[in-house]
Image 1 (cartoon, rainbow over the protein chains, first blue to last red):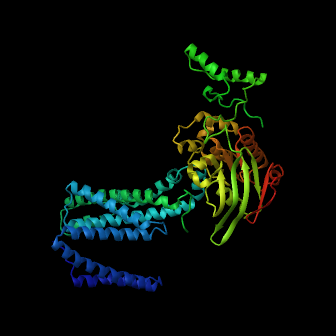
Image 2: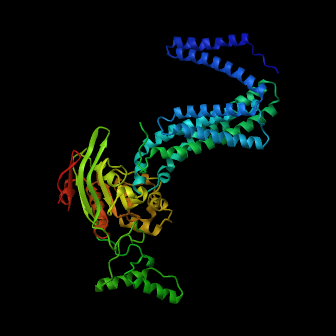
Image 3: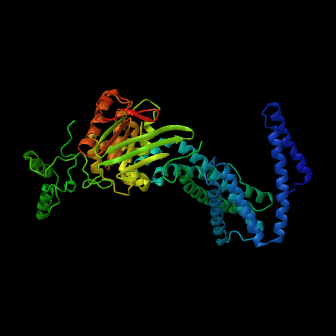
Length: 255
Length: 291
């Protein structure tokens, strides 16, 4: 292990935050308060999670690992719901979509023997999958709201012609699924060219052979594509119905 | 506007009451050939010219595809509104609307902007639910119908319609697509011909259509498969006099020749003057005009 981050170097790295704060103060950006809160929160949250993970890894209990994964999924679902802008039942939809996308992806990875059911692998990987799924679902919600507002007339016309809800919403649902998946597809295209992503960088940083590190990164790329596509498809197909009432009339978006 | 006598020349489309097409098909079958189309037109023309009972003029679009049951024992009143009201929060938009519309009737709805005309027709089209009163369709409460099936029978053309997809075909095939039926291209071409467009326009991009053409294509969407009632929300608004006259002649044809009940909102004084039955709305109430 050739990592050399100690407390002293962390404190010195805090100097970088000072530079940003100085720029913010000088340019009167008005973000200094937010930034300080952000830095403090990040430090506290990471320390807590670091000690928690250390404990969980040492315990190596299946049930505890599963509970932690469920907590991650619930939190991701809750955050995705916050971006739904009032779509009814957004919490169960988000949690359900993230749960299934995470379960399917983890299941395939485990069956393929890429990972094992041990906390040090399952928890970080679940976090990566759930957070990407969460971002994708958040984008889907935003797009659904925007499109139902913008395409209101077209949706009403389709309904007036006797289309069922699926036919009336098909274009919107497709566009929203694409929007949800787009960032993952874009980053897959540029991986290794523009950025050396987190997992790969971390492994190289920790002294792993780059050729081995890329294999992990390839796995991560596949896994994130699967997670965001499953999450987007499920969330869009479950959520679009919420824009209609029981008489199949268009009622949303609420604002 | 004279209707093309035989816009669609498929023997399969012949009205059941008329046997010339079947005679021709039988003759072709006897000869072992596929029924060709042209002679059918001639076979059809003679009995009509001779005034033979049972023969009748072909419709612009044959009624081979029709939502719901037509003919036979149709109830007299197609739509019946009793004390229908609509409130949005604290605001009353419609109040105490009593209106009976008979099958095959043409009802013109007029009134100042904001008087609730569009809300009323949206309630009739089942795009909104009334907040009070009773609304019956064909003798039964609208609530007993599946909304999708109902909307296929009571079709609504919105104000300033937008066209879907890329081409005219995308629009004319939509009614088939939603019913999981194969697209009847021949019928679509006949319909285009009827509204002054040509067969090649089927693949024309919708952005290349003029305002009048767009309106005609949008209206065709509602009648590719005949509804029982057609609700029109200011369909001629923004059109020039020529296009306006064309669209109205189309609608007159749907009403008089094909028996489609028409409910039309208009602001146009000449259309109001020509109305056979006028309903005037003011501040969400019927204030007169029924005749």
